[in-house]
Image (cartoon, rainbow, N blue to C red; front, top):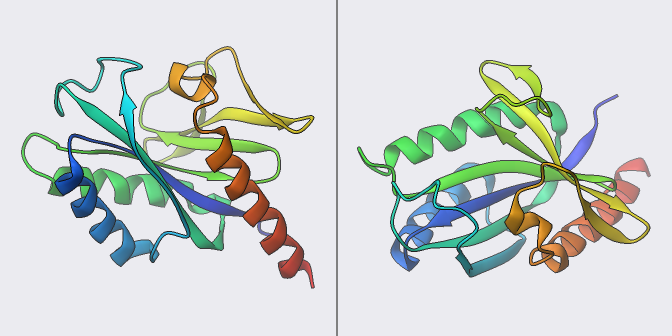
Length: 169
């Protein structure tokens, strides 16, 4: 049996032009987003200063449920999009998924809390959904820990619940 999830992308971008560039390419691959959260100021870390000194965060979710085991393919696709943005990347795209219990993000970086999926890709449970709330873990990124994205994630989780129920029929 396949575990089906709601694919999301978390983006970092320097301006609306690069946001649109990313949205156009992501939409061509995965369809028009179902839900969007855009133009949030991103100041959680300076790790991405190579992209631009000022960054914004966006999230997209997509209309259909997808097999969770495709997460490594999504990350490799995101890496190719980042490379297509120029010799100095102009965007950061982190694909992941939401289901009833968690937000999972893909990464190419190994850490003790990440599970190796193959092909240089790791998975991280970034948030857990418990007792009606998104709960951070010890290693959860500060911006995800802040609760700023919880309303968006709640909507995506509700979409997952409805679509999962329809899938079982």
